[in-house]
Image (cartoon, rainbow, N blue to C red; front, side):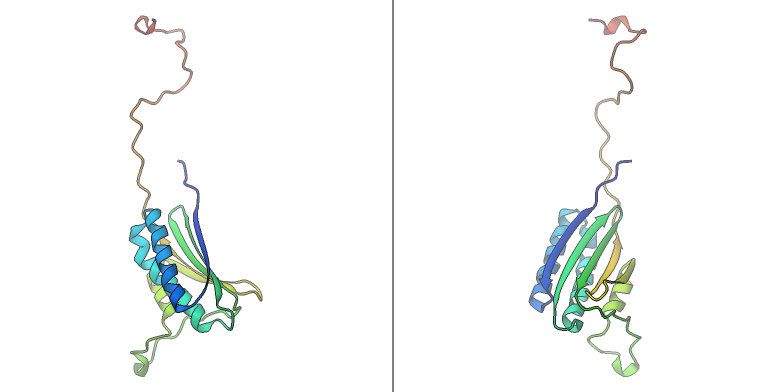
Length: 164
């Protein structure tokens, strides 16, 4: 089995509302290019949530890097920022907070992804990531010519019909 090499895309940006939409469009276009149209909505939602968290919670420096990598059958989307504080998955909202409009970003990531996590980067920040299962790659058509194994010489059992 021949495995396809990793596919990789990276974007550096300031996590500002105007840039979040741009990155969502870049990620969507990259997934279309990789023929992963079925993952566009989930990946765009996930990257939006992660970048919104950087915008809302990262102290002073809103610079971050978005990485999208397809390796075998897993798409991993990660956002690295410079705030070393590790985010917590928020507790379920109380009845009076039922209609809250924020605080659910990581819960959304957990619900829509196959897996997710946080990797501390020491004092220089952290990486928050999630994975999605990619659909199987289309199988290439079998070759139209017969497959030949071994030597290409006539050999000792050469047929008279093959002699020219």
